[in-house]
Image (tube, rainbow, N blue to C red; front, side, top):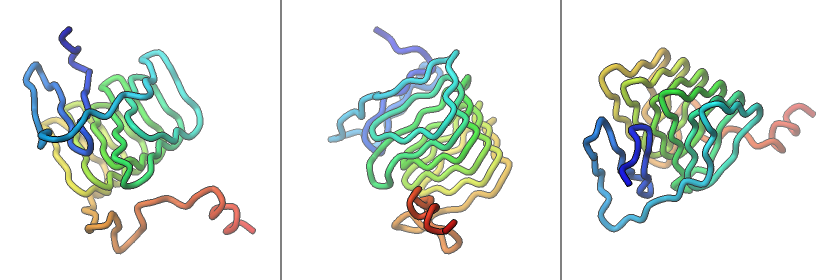
Length: 165
């Protein structure tokens, strides 16, 4: 069975994607595919924060933050119909939809032609296709996933409640 154009097959922190009928293979030798654990469908809307490990594909809308632990090898795929309104903190990200908020990709970020970001982008490695838009700052992360300005990992709920006390 041939995958649709919006399908992504993930290979650890490096992924194998189908782009316009041409397969792009990035250092896939010796890596096993990360399974797709969660799919948010085209007609679905999730309100609230999404925390995950493994692989997530968003074809619908998420109003809230999307997070996966640093170093986990987790992968987020946002299709051209997908939209996220909130902060995105995931080690590996493939975007072809819209994000309104800051994006933190500890390892790798791929912006496909329909990608639209309104917010700052923090990345380890980045690939930007012709047509992708970023309306904000592009900030390369140092080895270890942090910048001099801000830590990559947002504060935990416990840290936030302690700060308010």
